[in-house]
Amino acid sequence: MTMIVIATQCYPPRVGGIENLLCGISAALFSRGQQIIVFADSHGDAQEFAFDSKQGFVVKRYAGIKFLRRRKKARDISLFIQQNKPLAIICDSWKSLELLRSEAVPAVLCLAHGTELPVQCSRAKVKRIEASLTKATAVIANSHYTASRTKPFLANPAQLHVINPGINMPAVADKKTRHSITARLNQHSPILISVARLQKRKGHSKVMQLLPKLLCLYPNLLYVIIGEGPEQTALQKLVQTLKLEHHVLFAGPANEPETSAYLDLSHLFLMPGSTDGNDVEGFGIAYIEAAYHGIPAIAGRSGGAAEAVIDGQTGLLCSADDEQAFFAAICRLLGDQGLLKRMGKHAQQRAQTLLWENVISDYEKLLGL
Image 1 (spheres, rainbow, N blue to C red):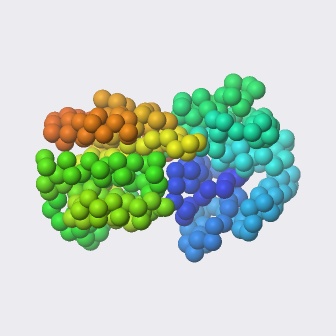
Image 2 (image 1 turned 90 degrees about the horizontal axis):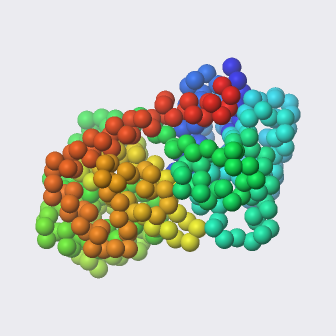
Image 3 (image 1 turned 135 degrees about the vertical axis):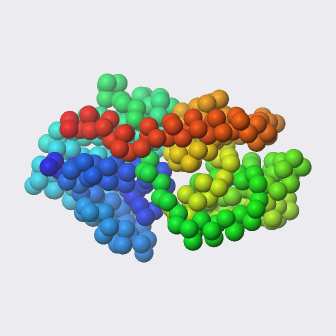
């Protein structure tokens, strides 16, 4: 049994792509017989203790002021490394690696997601990122797009590897849950769905602005939104302004079986993301999770979304700011059931290759396992 340390600021039960990625790596390595210990930030979530106790491996949490929290966690990890001599450490980003004493660790993996690597930043911050990444034996970008943002910070390009994030086998909704959600959908069809944090760049408002035109063609259409976030109030006001109360369902932060049920009953996944400053979709694992349910997606062309959705095969790409092109893409898929089903099948086949049981081997090679 090999000991592997996970150092992360982002970990469930907090919701997010990075959280899911680190949890997936931890659980997949643990399932392959590795000894795992996770050093994670605490964000005061009441569910943290219950979540951690179910993992089967140790999760140590750190709370408090960020400046002090980072340093205490780094000291504890460095001391743990000195005393236990783990084979490897995996850091969620350069920020978690920056303060560590990792010289004695044979394999040091640092993940790159995109948003934490600014296109433009001060020279002082560039030096911090560069110095942190030099400690890594391998830097893993979640997409080729993210790799392009990472390269300027690396002295040695051979450090850089691209591994798309994995997904877990989706939870299966029981009959009661499925019946409840079927009732909420209230015989609407077609069902459009987004599963994402409610923030501006995800494009929820772009979908809503098209709904009046789509309802002329599909008067029984319903748009389901799963997630929560800072844009929720603005989106709810937009629903009222456009008089879409009977055609938009805010499902909130649904649990995994509920999300699975919604996806099973939906026809098209929509997340026409765009770039908002340095905030960009590094890959977009939500597209893959939807694809596992046989749902094609429409995604924006920015960031790594073009690698998550293969244009013309597992869905369509279009600019979120081009209303006419976005409308045409939705109509093309909804108006051709044969095409919708073929793309859904291709999407599902692609998603199956990205199950963690398949993806984790790429990490194991870099860990020397």
